[in-house]
Length: 79
Image 1: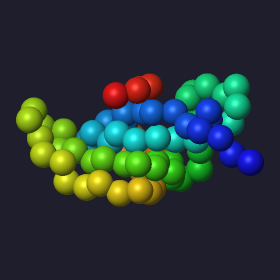
Image 2: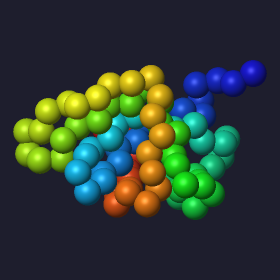
Image 3: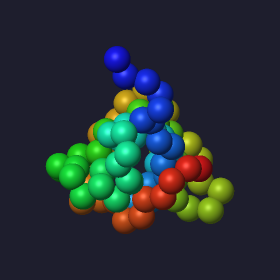
């Protein structure tokens, strides 16, 4: 059975957007491990997508999105 213990809040920056949401890490894994092992897309749940410009508006809210690994420039824990 899955628990919420493996859910980690993250913020990703792409060239155009700031994406806030949750990724599911394997118990004991680091965010770096998740990034290294990801294929072409990252699964992000409880996602919010914001314009990257200062004061940018929220453009999307969804329970699940896939984010292209090729477009991620920065990822950090929390938000």
